[in-house]
Image (cartoon, rainbow, N blue to C red; front, side):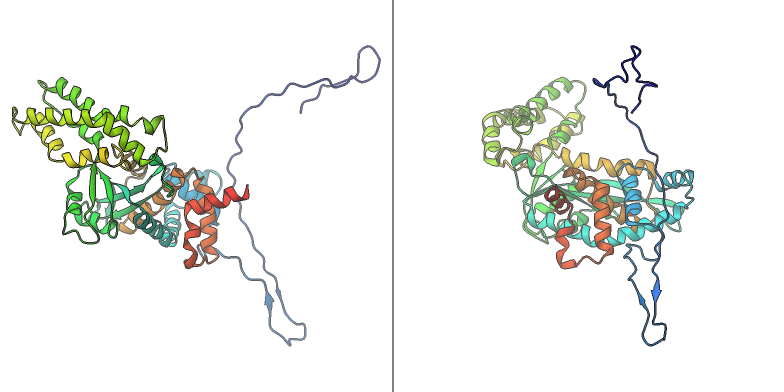
Length: 413
């Protein structure tokens, strides 16, 4: 509030009266401030020494015997796994604010915190497998330091994602990353053990054995292949224009048929199927007829021949979206999800060891699920860490899921 130097009226009638105001707004920032919280617990005893000592219980800490509060741990985790700021940069920022803490100390805090949230992420993974009929699955590299060799090895983060909003499903959205030391199909089988239904994938061969009758860990899965990956196949220069035109008609059919994704979000599966049968099916039939005709004319070793074979040998998986309204035409949702760990990978370069890779996956799972459900990750992690520190009962672990946190926030408003 800025007042004039004087409100005395020049005419001599006294003070001027207020008749209005001008108001302007500017955005400012209050710099971060670190505080040391000192907890004092006085001890009391009988002055005559007849009874024991009385003292209040110490407040619970997620990391016993360590400095950080639950809020500070949440801040470090979100900065690293949501804003992609590696720990060495965070250490520099903290030092600039007068808190010189070494990166190795921050890494120790995050490692111990990652171990504490492991049961929560494991339960989230089980909820996705047990309660879903369709999941997205994809994987991305996660470089990990290989002790003793002085170099990194290539681990993988396998993403399992559920998002049923496209067909108005009631299950909350979520994603879980699983760290594994490789990309073998046996890891996909291990991660999806107990799941029965449809997986939307990119036609990587590691998933093919999951659709066979000898699958261990459940019924044969249905594989819905991604048309976005199909469109990326290359043709030789002589057939490029024709290939592009036909693949746009085939894969682009769902731009007309799947207007429910853009103009009618939340359409029920039967509506999606009916529209696809009416609009997409004729174009997809025409597209695969053209593919089959071209396959007879060109060499299988040419770029076009390889592109044709890629689509034709997986035709059932590419057609699955036509007959099932629960299925999307592509797996772009999970591809977008794995970009976040990829951004972290670019900045942090590698995890220190396999357990570091698992912690990376755990934080990415919770923060990614928060973002899918419109939850502020920092607020959720603060609440989660506090509940874990106070000994949250394992039998009520559902209350620790991100969507349960969102429900509590909504109920309190």
